[in-house]
Length: 468
Ligand code: ADP
Ligand code: ASP
Ligand code: MG
Image (tube, rainbow, N blue to C red; front, side):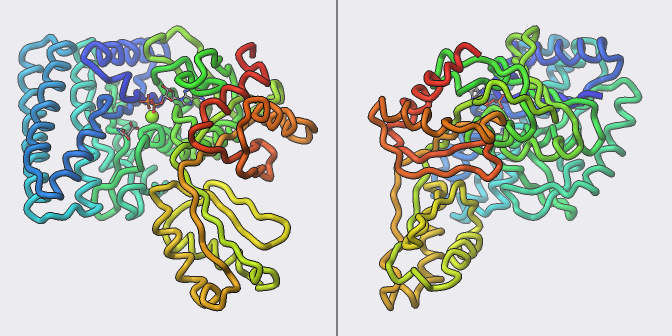
């Protein structure tokens, strides 16, 4: 059994959705079993939905009305392009219109209340997947195969962190098996809404932006499936983001650990949490291009291959360095522990940590959007030390980025850091701080945001990754 997920570009138009339907049909024919299809919203739709809710919270009633019209037009055009049967198209248009009526009503309520709650945001931002799943299922039906829409709110049961929820695997497994297996046995292709889930009490949640990849790997783990295929708009996982390095090459294979590092450090092609459920169960993941279905893409599994040493270069933008500094920190026990507990209390995850050996400062990197909450939580924790001047200040530097060099073959090989730093020095790029993961699978550095593209290209060049 295959779980296959199609991202925003792959379902970006009626034509693209028709291609999705063909891929699903071909897979059913070739493997002898219908695949479970997971879809994202059409490209750009989730951004529009989020904008509609945030503008309505400030009392703006025009933006969401305009967005509603745009979404209706876009989905109607898609239906016209991939659902030829007039009756099917007619009832589908009515269904889309009624979901959009509901969206408009929610935005009206947000505008009246003047407040957007996390629950309101989760409900509205998941609407794009619900619209797209309906069109995709109808397109599959048009290919002559039975298909049904399955709302992930009935399948993926999560904790209550409404906009970045974690799945409860036992419950999800029971629901997913009970609902999906009978459909598959009957020869029906289920089309599941990506990105969304619900708590056990039925409160809608999302898995966080880009979370449809995670939906697919959660379902694969829970069914369990034989493989997960992530269909996207590039030829698999590449040595760098092809938008930054046009010469980037497809990596034919990667280990789970390498993929986890690449996605954690910014390779948007897979959601950072998506590898975990399948790595634990040993389910292989293929990353494929829906625009070029014949390309073999990338196979991610448990096999660790050490060559080439460096597999990929990634970057995370819009991060800040927070530094806690002061001569009085020397000898004050437990400062690091208290700082990191304070960060955890602000519900923020730390991307990278560095401490100088003098023990006079601790620095760590968090997303810039999280920095105000982090700084205030740390200042509160260290109030006494700050007052006594044992600690001088909690400083923040914005407009920096993390560049990470990833590869299992880097372990125990001397000279890699020297080559990386040499490549940056030749481009006159200053390294602000450095960290190496204990696995030695990655070496990460902080540079000024303005230098990030140059840094990625310089390292890619130095390791000749275009020739991999
Ligand atoms: P989807 O909508 O299919 O989920 P995303 O936009 O989320 O697609 O992810 C695919 C994009 O990820 C690519 O278009 C590419 O620009 C970007 N990307 C960043 N790093 C990498 C990488 N190392 N390999 C492949 N793509 C990458
Ligand atoms: N549509 C969602 C987003 O844009 C989820 C996804 O595309 O994976 O974040
Ligand atoms: Mg994505």
